[in-house]
Image (cartoon, rainbow, N blue to C red; front, side, top):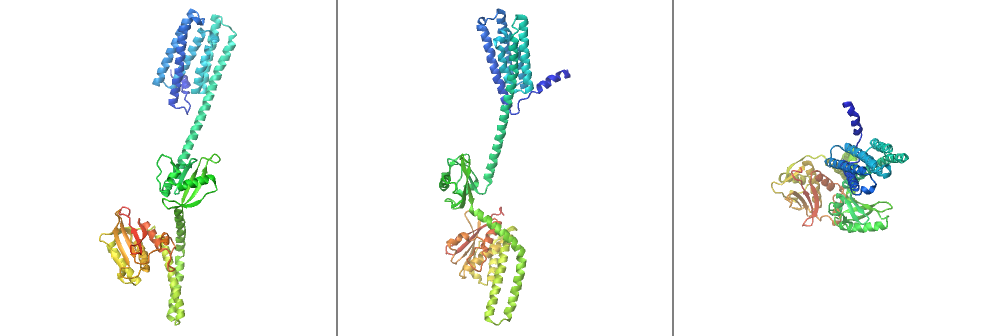
Length: 542
């Protein structure tokens, strides 16, 4: 039994739906095919019942035709129920339906007038369906079975009913058309499915590319806006919202003019003249300097453009970081080589001062000492840049640490202790690296002392808490303050208005504050002098 069943199982196991044809689509196709068969069976039953006498059938042939049509309709109903229940598998159902059609149409053709009745033409529809949902071997098997049934039916009619032997030619042509229709339907179905698979792959590729573009745009530090030909923003990234000061609604298109009328005007001008590109402007809402570039989309068939907003402040900061990183590496390599000659020059100059009696020569020697001291200070300040990554944050009691620091600074700078005024409540705490904290205070207090009147209370250090609960430390002086035109350059490296300074003190203070989760800022004090404020990070941030 096992060996006998093997060919049958392998025959129908060879059937499988096309790879791109989903199970739901296959069952839907079977449902539509059975609907056609059910309508066909109903038409045959009613035609034989109502118009059987006018079809030139014999009484016996008319009854057989009616009962054969009824049996076919009942078998179609069985197929409909099987499709609805989805049992058994589709391969068995298609085989059953094709066998029923072959047997029923051959029987109806025999009793309905043979090949001349054109009833065998109905088999073409069934074979076309089988060709669309089956593979080539099974399709040709169905065509072969239909051809054999048609030839046997006509041969039996020639033997028993004196049918014309000349109709064998017509029967052969019809059998050939069975094969042709089955194979053509199969070929067209494969072509359609290949096209569908190609379209599906292209759709996946386009979807992947669209997702990659979206992730790339979202991850860009600069602002990116995808604008269509009508001026609607189709896509944006967080950088664009940050620079424009506008929150783009999710899953909703907005007009370019809603987020920036200036960009809308530039976009309209660029569409008239494509050579307008790489313009720098200041955005009105955020006052950020950006460089605007337009990248055309679509080529000849203009679709829109990608508007790139390059943050000039970020570019400048990156350039400064690169420059200072290179300077730090250079300084680390040559600091030792520079300090040794400076020490030798300074020592030799001091010896010459001791033996010199000429006032003019003594003045020149003092100039040498001052400049060697300045060179040594420049090297020390530049080397501080490399310290920002080595932080060991700790809890610093400001009410304890600041008096000690001020006493030491007054002694080093040789000024009275009364010049410094402290207002540090008990319990004021900062989380900071102690070495970094002293370096920041040293830079701020020396600057304040340099520009102050050096009277009692000229330099004031106050600790307080802001509205957000952050601990603050203010260093204020009674000097002339900073000119408004120079405020934006205060924390730039190598920017100084004092010929004796290096221009690195405030920059190093800002870098060390950022390394300790703190923020340093400047404002003009109520007394007209300069006031630098340090906002410390919380304990959790530390």
